[in-house]
Amino acid sequence: MKIAFLFPGQGAQSVGMGKDIYEAYEEARNVYEKASAILSKDIAKLCFTSEQEELNKTENAQIAILVTSLAIAEVLRKKGIIPDICTGLSLGEYTALMYSGYIDFSEGIKLIEKRGYYMRT
Image (cartoon, rainbow, N blue to C red; front, side, top):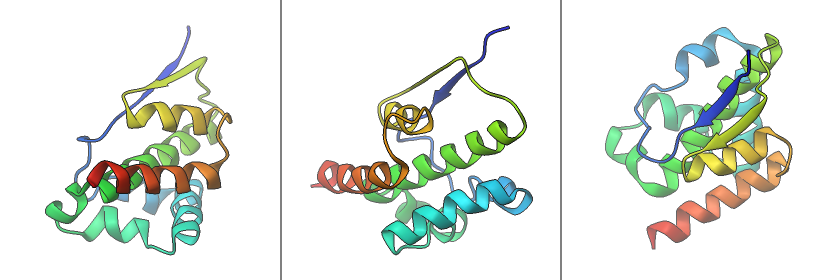
């Protein structure tokens, strides 16, 4: 059987997304913490406790979806679930490239931060 990961684009955000996986898996927490350190912004707090209106802002939604998607994918990787192919919808294309190693994690986080900013303006 072949496995594919299809990463979501903007619009998939909802307050609380990823909280269950964050609380249950160290691998997920590590992804959130690493992204938060790069951006000097608490991504877990943004995802789990912000108001929906704040999370819906393009500059927040994009980084929140990216980090949550990567955290979930990392947990799956640790459990031996490795996709044969990754793809994504708009923002999800960047997630797929980062997960697959074509874009460095740190550079990808910074890129999506800028992407969200420029799409907002």
